[in-house]
Image (cartoon, rainbow, N blue to C red):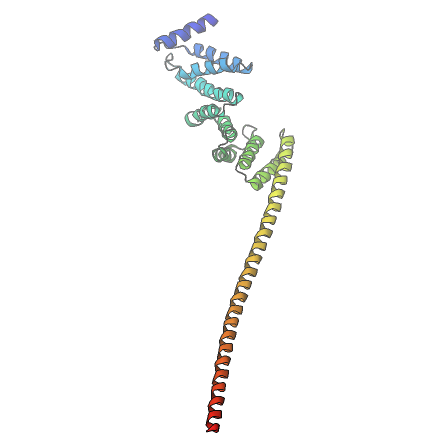
Length: 263
């Protein structure tokens, strides 16, 4: 069997014209699945890529080839996900979502695409995909709690902690027996701590802003008082000058009167 597979692969890649039988495709695919199950990721990836590259197939086997290729892309996404190569995982899940919407693995690929996007720090894109999955399919694949979990993780990535907390709490209310309960409770505690810390920080900021506003108001009041005092001082100087002028006039009048009396 192994020699037969090698023969077909060599013939396929060397000539590019050999039309494989669907049984040959199946054998390559199943071998790749076995390698994936045994965590031989490089071999699995190589096998699945071989399946996706096949173009020529025996007459009447086109639909079967499409099914194998859809699954090959799906499992390529899984293999790269296991390698933590989320960029490649996203690319392969996207191929399934865009090109194989009639496949039975489409909904799972949609969920896994959203999850991989979140782990690739593409939070907004991941949230959009997961919201779409939840709205259309809910618990179809028994992944409702998982979809909500990664949705919450996406909101955490965006630092939208209130929405993340509400989503985590929703999971426990809707899926009390979820296997994710332990992790979710840990995240809830963490989110509540973050929210409380933010509230305390906001309170401090508000206090500082209030103190700054009060200081500004006080400084403005002092500035107005200073301006008023300066005006009063100016008026007093004017008044003093007028009094001095008046006193000077009186003195002159007295002198004139005395001079007239002396004459």
